[in-house]
Image 1 (cartoon, rainbow, N blue to C red):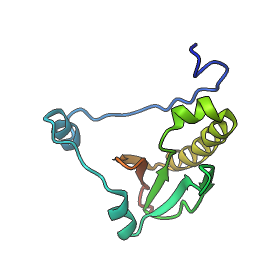
Image 2 (cartoon, rainbow, N blue to C red):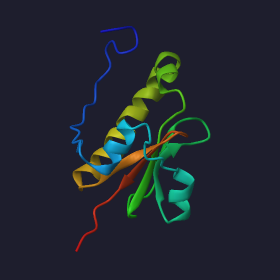
Image 3 (cartoon, rainbow, N blue to C red):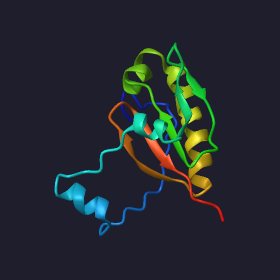
Image 4 (cartoon, rainbow, N blue to C red):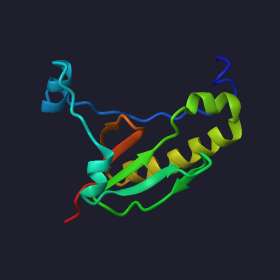
Length: 124
């Protein structure tokens, strides 16, 4: 327990990391996969979650092959200055990411601007 996490719920996800995959080998060689949210949007991705104009979570569509999930620029600072809004983010992120991951989606990567880039499985 610390001053930031005290009394807060925690979220955990199980991660499967294929250590022999080309992406992991490249990252270990200091050549990580660079993902770009703007390029993903141009290619047809949808925004599943993003900050609104007041840093509150705004949910969107989850029905594309690629879904972008944004997070606030400084969630740790928000947890200290506006714990209620940070809690709203925790719930929204849990709901959106939980729905996507439960449906078989995978996190392709993280954009430096604060986006998870998530790919949904193709259904046959």
